[in-house]
Each structure stands twice: as C-alpha cells, then as structure tokens.
Image 1: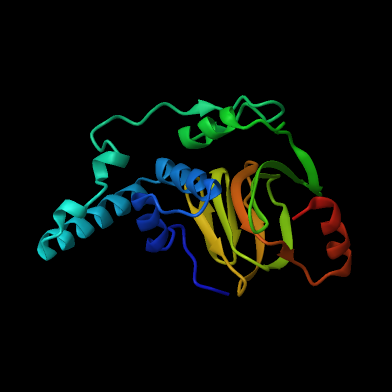
Image 2 (image 1 turned 45 degrees about the vertical axis):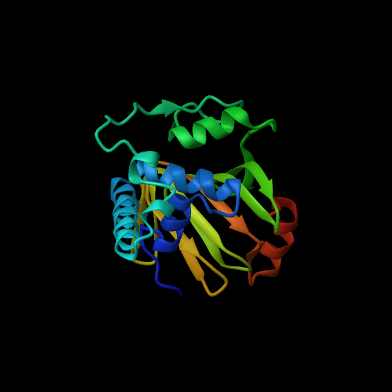
Length: 219
C-alpha cells in the first residue's frame, strides 16, 4: 500500500495554482478540497510564496502569472455552506461552492443509484481515459470490499468519515490511491458518509462475483 494521508501531494497543489491541471474533474475535486480544508489552502498559499521568491531571486519575477490572491482571499470570511439541490441528490449534503457551481452547469440527470448493500453512487461527469467524477454515499458501518485500482483514485470526504486501515478520513480530507494500492475501507459509525471521487480506470477485484457485479456498476 502506498503511503497516503489527508493532504494531497504538493504536485497537485502546484498544478492547481498554476492552472495546469489535466481535466475538469481534477479542477472540481481539488477546488472543493481547498474550500473545505484550511490546511490545504494554506499549503497552496505557502507554495505560491516559495515560487514567487524563487522567481524573484532568479530575476524572473515578471513571469509570475498567479498569486495567492488570485485564488484565495485570505481575509474574507468563509462563505456559508450551501445545501445541494440537484435533482434526486439529498438536500442534506453541504456542498463546497466549486462543486455546487459544477452541478448547476452540468446537463445530465444526477441521481442516486444502487452500488451495493448500503452503498449508492451518483455519476456526475465522464472524461477521457476512463475518467469519472462521481458521488458515493455509504451507510454507517458499511465495509467496502477489498479492492485495488487499475488507475488513479482521489476521494474527497464531504460528509461523515471512513477508515482505511488505521488512517481516518473526515470532511475535507482527500485519500489518494493508485495502481499499487489495495485497501479495505470501513465507514465510521454515527452518520452516513458521502464522498466525491475521481477515478481513472476501473477498480480491481479478486472476487469473481464482484467482477461480474462490476459490469453493472460501470466502476
């Protein structure tokens, strides 16, 4: 298993700040993460300051195309959380503005669909290279079957929390997984967990039954 935590690799934050992410899905998920995680937004600002200082030392300050103020108003009060009201998605989800704006602009119907016992999914966006942006809703105490990944996966917690091994992920945290990741996820007790996930490639299961079921889920 790769080493993962609630923060993303710095490369993601630098690409976001520079406007060089590869897809709409990445932009929506990371922007949502930065809204929910003060630690992550501070890290982006710190990386921007470091980059600006390096450019000034090199005498290339005129090439700086972005600043912390372009992305965050550090003195502005946080906006009030907005309930999601998109088709059949529960209004109880507290959305970051980036995800709310994205849902307002998409033309597909967004609704919860069966994914497994205690699990539901809502597909939001399909991109190139089997890239999918989707919502996962899981009941408290549900165990997600052991699985691996044929590509990458970013999972942002919007509500509730889950454990992957000894590591807990709560609202605003992101778990990164890749082709070398195999894990068992258990939803924490107390309340349902809702996550925004961005996956490339399909999940990898050892169980023949789960492989068969995967045909119907599309994941």
